[in-house]
Length: 257
Image (cartoon, rainbow, N blue to C red; front, side):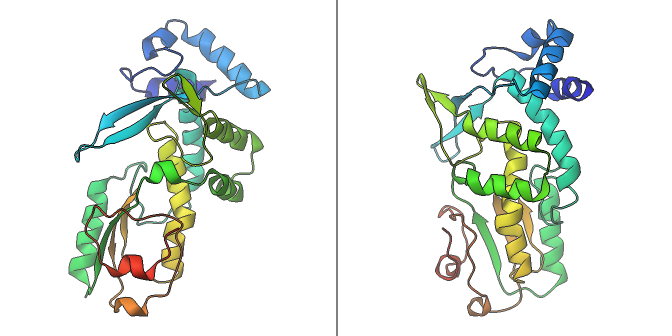
């Protein structure tokens, strides 16, 4: 129960409530009793994830970004699971991955990129953004990636419960086989796991990049000092957005779906 208690105190105090309507303060009024009940349900397998509440926030270009706001107990359990999984995946994630990782930030990614560009001869730089990444992650493949490293079925079942809980929008619960629910506590870690297998490892295995600096789904690469035609064809299973500037050969040389 100590991990759940620590997870509770790591949550944002003023965060918007989910479909349960519970705020951080409401839950804390009987914290020990609530955590004891939650701990018991999790260990008995009686814990049930609630749908996330859909909320939209404006993007700089005028479009709306969909967020999934989880119920408070889901946030607590997700935070606890993130602490457990971080201990595992921080040993696996590659050094050029910076987004949503402990003691790393986008500023570190930019610093690494500057060092890579100024310290070596570079012919090509790619700036790319993965289109609607959090909404298009294949849950089937994500679970398979998790199973490759995580053998505790209880952890896997918890993650599958969150993925299948759906999103409540306009009074209707919508369940999809794609997406990780951007805005939830665990979605950044799940995104990093997916990117690790579908993106990072493929690029380094094929020697497509020398010093990449990747910040979650926004990527900047220092490419190998070769011409584009010398790079082999690969499939990363994601779409690149047309918004950021990037080299035209990206789309012509890579199968992105």
